[in-house]
Length: 197
Image 1 (cartoon, rainbow, N blue to C red):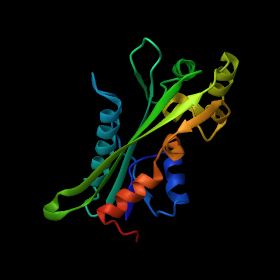
Image 2 (cartoon, rainbow, N blue to C red; image 1 turned 135 degrees about the horizontal axis):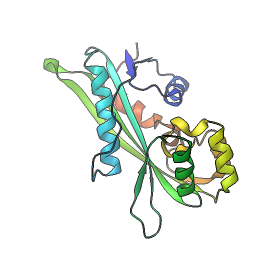
Image 3 (cartoon, rainbow, N blue to C red; image 1 turned 120 degrees about the vertical axis):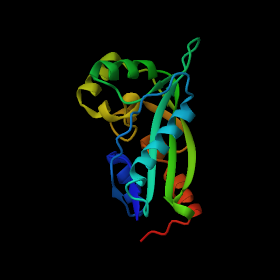
Image 4 (spheres, rainbow, N blue to C red; image 1 turned 30 degrees about the vertical axis):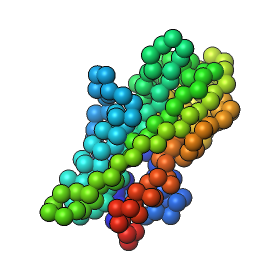
């Protein structure tokens, strides 16, 4: 049995579309980045924490944890990590930052399952995709935020939704931007010896 340690409907849909059977158990994990933490390290730490929180209660199951972070680097400014917006004003702020720039979408993935001696088998990976956005007019941003779509998404946008009209191209895995690099996950499950039952 595979348990998805996430309440994300996008991740669930991606797994279903790939034909991977699973159940859901949402992990209650503080997603705040640590001081000075690099984006890749943060995404991996949170993915592992989510998987571990669910695996402790289900030690005979395989658990999939994931965390997605958007990283924007403007000229002359330090890189900033964008998680889920706190409110509408925060979503507007994030989208203004992304307007007209390329940014990276980083997903940490952790697969955890039963191992020898009661210790779990743990595999982790990081996937990064670069997304290029055109300039977005303020009225477009305000209308998009008012739709409610950005509120539970890293970077305050859904590439598969209304924000698709702003994305000019990507470099890397599209599904990673949606929320889960499916090919990476499938490869990890196979390498761990997970058998879909």
